[in-house]
Amino acid sequence: MVQEILTDYELIVDSCEQPRERPGEYKEQKRYYSGKKKSHTFKNQIIVLPDGKDIVDVIVGKPGPKSDVNVFREGRKGFDPNQRFKGDKAGASQFCKLI
Image 1 (cartoon, rainbow, N blue to C red):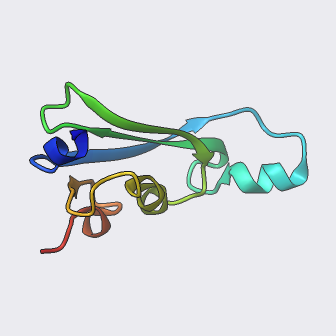
Image 2 (image 1 turned 90 degrees about the horizontal axis):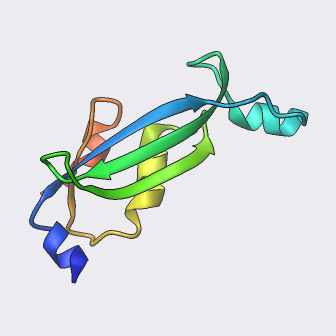
Image 3 (image 1 turned 90 degrees about the vertical axis):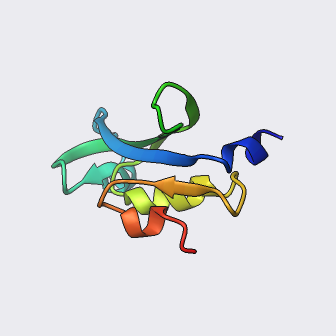
């Protein structure tokens, strides 16, 4: 029911990196090290309605080096296949549903 209502909107997607403590184990350090931020980070994503007042979905704590578009692709599985999304240039061509 909610998914049907959401397909009436083009949802806004945005991602960001959040600093985290340096992990103790080397494998974890590699997994969370973001060359872009030059530190260990978590990747977070938020999906909101076009007016920005209502949050539709939140993904928190993915490894920082994971690209925005890959986080989006994983999170999109819970949405209707016809759902339209709008994102920034980091993944705009991937976020927008092709007609």
